[in-house]
Length: 292
Image (cartoon, rainbow, N blue to C red):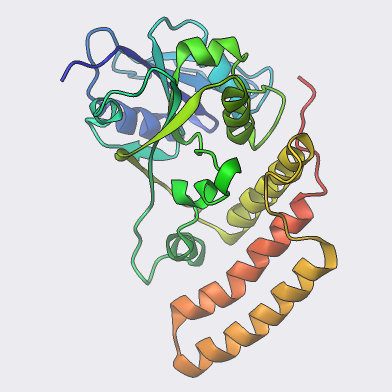
């Protein structure tokens, strides 16, 4: 199968050790002669890269505005390939990911290809946050495609036609979350379509602590509220006291059932699912925009 050239862009925030792990995962990708792989360092001060083995991967700094959309735009700008594949740094792609994206070839009217997302498989004895993320299965593309006409692919693993991406101005670089939904809606408004490519899959690593998990959910809440203001009715949102009341009742019922069965998974779900809902609700009150 002959496929078009691809520029792979990976936004990154973290320390040097984290970057080494990302490089190890991303360099497993099978690249063609016309492909490129670029990591965008979105940390504020930028990392010192002296002596770091990058295996030929280009790394650019984009710390002026710490948002994934800003980093992705910076990474896409120098490329020339007709397609751009955006991968999150906390994913592990399969080696033949790029080939799978174009089997079958996308329609001429398609601007976005939604790659597969799999939650990191973890054993029952894993940390509470990691095990809950696996049980919740919230990172799959089904999660956001379930919004019907407002469904969209998560940008942790997507391919975008460069022509369409540049025509709509890329991602909104000043928002902290929901930039993938916004890009999808603008592309659709311009007449472009979305196709799924579940076989072009990555494993998405879960948050390791409950604090990090709830912080992520609060950020998603901020993004959800922002996108719902931009596109009224697009994201189903629980509202105010009703969401908190549901969370408390669900916790009480779930705890009793889990304790009777002595089921750790049920216990984790009973406690963390309502806490996730509360974090999302509180996050809706946080600004989703940065001054960049």
